[in-house]
Image (cartoon, rainbow, N blue to C red; front, top):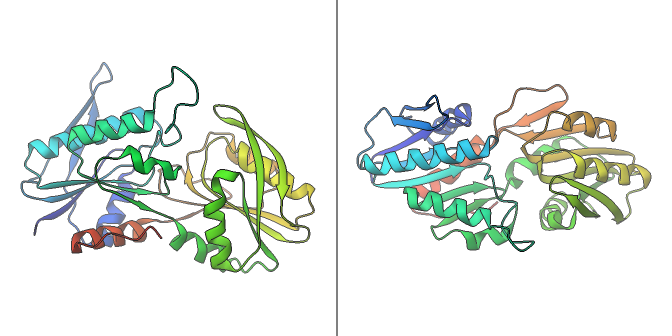
Length: 306
């Protein structure tokens, strides 16, 4: 396939443009609009016949609208004759609903995957999926990426002495283990219990953090409750300072205030989702990481997770 192009959806057009520059790909214009009744309407404005096409669209809030936009773009591209359609989804919504935790619940992640596959998506590139178990939700080839290549250098550049890496819950332990090994730092973990759909409570701290500069690493922040609980536990255990790196800034309006009140001194995230600039929040671009993944796919090689 000689023809190669990128289409940016409505969720994060700025990242799509940066990604096209990194990958050396032309951008094909597309329009995403809404009818008066709220239905999504898309139109691909350029020729994609025979193209190896990459659709860039995080399914961030509003998740349902952005997921439907991605599905409609894939269907439009298939109808327009695209030779291959790859979805590049820096943040995959519904990833936290990959299992039935009670009778009568759906497996929303699997359903979202089937929707995209039916629409014409043939390959899927995702950054920092919430659960490794999501591999089984995809019948199309999945290329999951970790944020380690951007996170580890960023944390190292802070120059923190007596560094400790902290997982804010058991689910993030493998990620924290990778960071701790790369930075040659000790590892701690905060255990928690979930008290609601978007609420949790810290229970205990495993590991010695007294006098250490602690960096909590997580895949996403929504309400900020998990990170705030971990920060309070670290402060109570005598940590010298508390910082945080998280990949996806899926943040409720009060999240930053909650984290600041919990004593988190430095907050760093990526541009995997679009959000308005906020004081006290540093942002690192994942466009180089995603661009390198696309280059490898174009060459016939599978991108390594990290």
